[in-house]
Length: 423
Image (tube, rainbow, N blue to C red):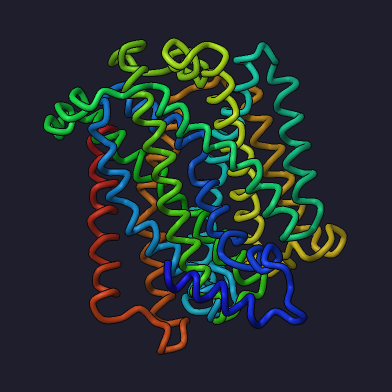
């Protein structure tokens, strides 16, 4: 906190003409891509996976969420470091240092993760609409128009602020968890009884790992940092922001899991969930029908929309870095047609798929498990880039480097083992 305060006050002192504190605050960590990408990480797929975990296994998987915080920070901090000190995006650096083949492999993983995430986001939007009797014929086109409208402004500041405002509705999950009145004695017994031999338990553990580490998060944060032109002076603030975001996203996910453990286990038992509506209905039995639907609906809708913006932009940026077309939110659509075109096609196409398909919880969870399977590739390329692309003084080294490698190896092995066991 002292370092953050020092940075803030030093910026206030150096503002020309003594700019107001609010304007200075907006230039610090609280208005950057780190918070935004973490809010997007707690998306509809994350919500469904956490709720399914709580419904079937109580709070037994909650410690895993908090154990992932350090690696989540270290991964995204490397993306920030690369974006600031190279000024280039993730795909661009891979192509430059490891060749086009590896760049396209990384881009393929990005496409898979983004399309899987977008389908879960629109599944969440459709599910919230159906809770209130609105057909997906209405909610999906409205969501597409909203996502296109936000990004077509062509401004980082406006996109970031609108997305963060939408994402703030995710704080409703904390209220839901509090109102669910979790029982400490029951949770304590569950934490002493971990069914490590159960394939479904390991499958959901892999899904929570994949929900935490989405490949598009690395592409987005590095590209956003580079596109905004952040410099070494912004590095400390960006690190604070990334650390804060890592804690917030895992707290929000844990809140969903705890609320589900306190309510959904009694409502659906070990049979699991079938839709977003199932989660809302079960929570409403305890929280209150109107309050439960409103709080949960606002949280899921906010999570779905902000994640839809972020992961679609990550796809447009990532493919642009590999293919070489113009890519920037600071350029109007006419000057960067491929960038905005890919964003629009990804959003509209995913909405169309959800319009055709049923709202299945199993599909959401499988998408998260696929992210866990891709984690070794994502982290491996990121660490390799940090060792060769960064200026020597900024490269991770010594104990910290080996800590990153060890944590990544343990989490990757756990994710792969859970995916294989639950297949």
